[in-house]
Image (cartoon, rainbow, N blue to C red; front, top):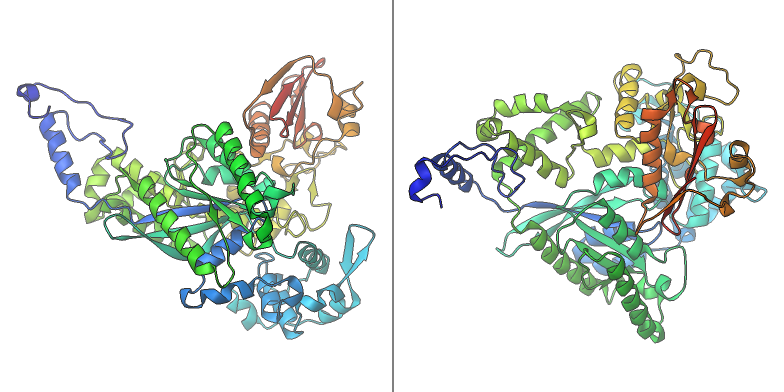
Length: 616
């Protein structure tokens, strides 16, 4: 068509063209300009060199174990199964490694050192805590004695990257709760989403390798509000795990495949072949039950296919880490991942300039981290850096090529580009979300730096003072930077600032401006009948309410959705001239009561078991 006789009079306007391979931008208003543009793009190699694997599933299904197996030294893979030992057999180094993951505050490395000095192992953890009743745990005399008169040198603290601090108080009540949680579960939950040390080399059709980075996603429901921000890219691989025993017997892990497949589908379209399914803990099923397992898995796949018709489901992979099986398992996984990466990379235009842009973003992130600044950069600021790069002149001239480059960086996890950030880019979002959320949600709320005492978090509300205290060692100027962080989190609708009237039930709003507070809807409690009845008279049982309103049935309701809706509604409609439309005391994780004027009330209730949203 470009060579047709009408080419001299044909006018082209390709601005905002939705095609991304290649990004057409505004190359020129005539076919000659377009032809020249294609010729320039053709000079750059287009092989996709990098891709991400998101490892998903309910808590405790073996996601971290899967990541560890894939990155375990290949020459000693037969020894990997021996590392999967019960807690009672953990040695002192394993306990120290666990203690270092308790948080980012100054006391954490001190606790790890004291444990190491006292040679604490999994066998004697029980000696460090005392149970009071069914759920209350306190430090034992031995734990108190271990930390009596603890002194740690400034040099030790500086080695851990923390400077200019005094000897911190050790919150032994939190340490005791962490120990108790570890003993109950036998493992420590992943926080948010974490990049796994090490990467995989996947083979492409042309013989060149692709670098595959692994991301281990936490299974706790509270994290889904941030997971949805990190899982929306088309150009990622996703591995969903479910333990073999959960197909044969109903457990807390049953339905992991179906749930996460539906969650991914709810986030939008995905590239064909990008989803993989894995069966973990295969060694826990007896040989005599294998036929029943295969039949149960087949039924589950049929159920998933029916619920996610547009999602392409591949054959599942059985994961067996026993010495005689692990090499075959890992070879199969790498083959399946290589094939999936090839399918995802098909027709995905990745010119060399994208990788050059990636180097610039990585350098900006390192500079900001070294100066303990916020990992934020304005698009205009990045574009100024692009303008002075000899290798990125074409990208500087073409806004759409620049935008596609940012989308590539988002696909490989280096930036978050969300329209709600108003032109800002969040650098290394996975690491930042994991670090930030660790202060609020940790191991089923057992250990956090914010909610270590009940007075700090009341129905999902957190004061800026406590956030500042938790983050003060992470930034150069926390009093200025922490409010900026909370503004960022509010923009992403993960939390919302509260008006003075919402801050407590007593109505005391004194010093409201000096002590601002924020509500995290994902940390709200579930609705309790008696609480709802206070604001919805005549209904004593919230579970059996008779609705005379609208009932909306969905194929799937992501748990993070209602929390996000609460945040969005509250930000825009928290208060009107007649009084509060929404108030924190009338909000729950699965229910909310809106007050419109003096007489009208609306009750919203979501039931994730039936995927129903009711409006009364």
